[in-house]
Length: 284
Length: 296
Image 1 (cartoon, rainbow over the protein chains, first blue to last red):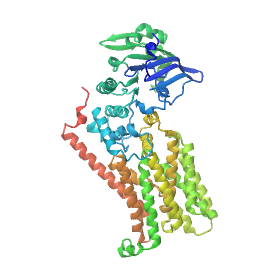
Image 2: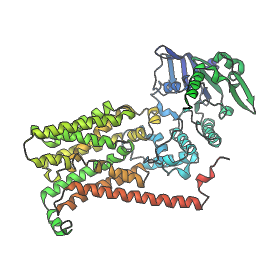
Image 3: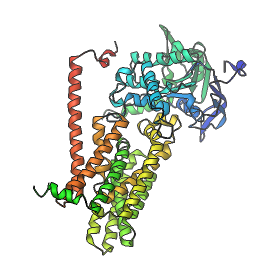
Image 4: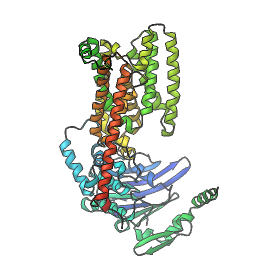
């Protein structure tokens, strides 16, 4: 069950093509022997515990981190070269309330924030594009408010608009739903899903919680302590495969169309020790 | 009080060459300071501006001692300071202390250099609190030249710089060279600071570089509008300060900083009143979009 889709490798350029990739820092190997091909229009969820190299994988695809071995191509070019064709949605972070920046300015930066020069010439076309992008995520009513006073959900909607305004072929999402409530998780997920359906943008979605995106996921890349699995959710998200991957008993429970992974946290003994030690120092 | 506001005397003084020269210099400085200001405020560089200004003072003191033009000394000092701060203060947690360390040493060195200098003592005082009336033709040329360079570079890097300032994570992801934009901007600020040192002096440069932009940020959240407002405020403070200081012959610095401060206070009051109006509206009308997106 390693890579599905090796058979159609010859068919055109994939949104992401990773072959024999390894990433190591000193003697610590994050992962090695990674082959992943993401087709246009495919939704791939990247799962795994903290420190398993999920975010680092995104950095590789953005050209911010070189591989230790292997090759990677994004939309047919070397990573970092074709960043115009890649949209990026980060995790929600608190922004300074006094920041001199409106919601629509944040979206506009996604369009031309990386260009040199004044850009005075295309102002009218630019305004129209920003208006459209803002409207497409339903953010028109608060697009002129300072970003610092917007709620996390409102900010993430604008983030999606910011990533989509450049009409990317590939959308990289780094925990965009973290710290959002369920309603906003659904809204943001649906905005991303709609883009994929309508224009065939491939989505690589890093998350620690698969359920909000489960209905849309084609394949899962599950990273744990240097090992990984790639396959459909029903292939990867089973007690047997995850127990083997973690090397410790893990139970996968399906309840009402959701998947819950039990025991994954205690399977990583470093985490438990750390939390225990922390708890004991608390009552002073 | 009559002595403070003598319109007739002011009008007469406004025809003098050296006064016009001073006004020209102030106008150029106001433009540059206002254009850089919003980015300085957003990047939390107020203290860096102050530190850079102190080193511009050190440079100016050295130039005074060596008999070179004070403007060149201030420029060299400020640019070296900007580069030092950029190199040593990379990490956010460290930046404040690094500025404090460099600033105090530079100031001490400057005092020593002035002690060696046995020329006119008004020159010494001038680089600390400004000596706009002593601006000469060659100073003005350097001022205009530096200002043009700063504005051109700023125009070229403006969008990536704004991106890197307000949204560094995504800017990096989009390939914006965040790492070298910071020191480049620090140098631009250094050059502008050096210009300011000659007009309001090393101690009060912040009044033109930071206060107008901080005031603008209170009343608008559009980056463009904030820049335009900051330029207007800085011009009002710089030009207004000089004009008001003419009749009484009092220090320019006081009037520049006083106008700047007043504008800031007014902007805060406006922001406060607007905020109260908005919260009243939110309380009365429940049709605001923010109230509608409450999760069930």
